[in-house]
Image (tube, rainbow, N blue to C red; front, side, top):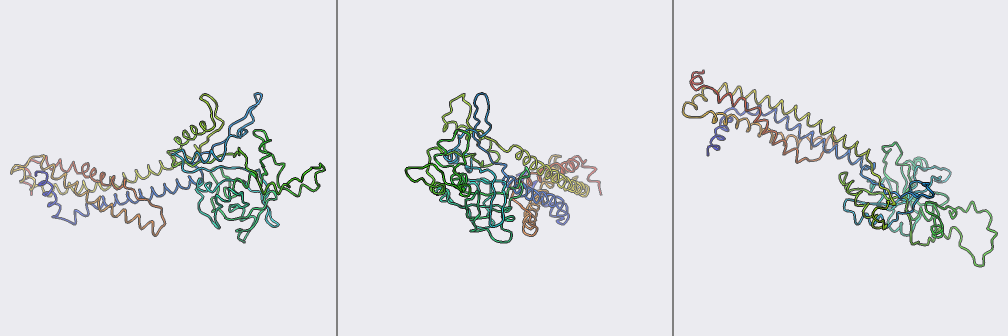
Length: 459
């Protein structure tokens, strides 16, 4: 009851001069509103930056084959055929920290020909439709991605980047046009959206993406026989579908007619073991990268039957440099917003302290009268402290509404990326009450220290 009476007395004192109370809280309103607006803009900008960096592969992991060695000589990374498409599927299904995976087959640099124009792309990759999800490349500029049926049937389809569109097709649409890669015709079913250069300055749009089965069995010409006969770490191109190089028939006579290179490429025979060059993995978030690496390591060691103490036949690489840059950017944005918040709220708090000191001076006679009829110093201290807190809380509530409205208007009319921040709203309320206590304590303490006799004499 005593607290209720104190709050009611403080509220009535504020009601005596509503305009002055509003102007007193104006500094808090502006400060809290600015903090809410900038926090939401900062959070939206941070999310946009994270999305942009993630699209460049910041949350991606690369699972690479291991290294073979013979006679003390290492043959380098990728010289062991230890990764399969089934490994990719198992990682996606059994690792909770992984969002998506994609097996990747690479082809050596080759000319891509369309009509009288040609271009050597930076990358010729074979993968599955999940490759676009792993690389956050789901937006298509034109056409549509290939599907799982194209992968199963090794269909001769592909996606191309904007750089190839510019250099091969100029002003015409590439959809349903056929390009030739090592004399294998691939139909363009889609054009990837522009992605720009990566962190290393490499053009990500200079790309041909096809089903991995198409690239492995048709373009590279890796038939089942070649896979069975080739040694670890070697690749064969003897069965490439290049009819221009077979100008003369083989002189060796066969009892039964043999299939031509084109027939072999058109009807690839499945093999028991099919390797891929690498597996791209997207973690669910940057915080899950370490967990994802541990889960992938445990799973692949189990699948490859690697005993405890034996060396892994695979390597996992993460994008540590990109993660460090993203962390640094987020830290700078957070520090900037905290600095702005401090300045805004300090200015509002100084205004409240100033007005409360004026109020104590104006109400000196009232304070002396209350003390004369039995009010204690702590009662006077509590009344003025509660008045200050009420002013700050009212300013904080109005500031929250003003901040939310400002961020909405900036998003709608100025295209600033914003994202609702519940933590900023809770912090604004807490900081408003804190400012009221900190900056209202001195005026309240000064009022409680007045001598009743001197206060009654004050005119």
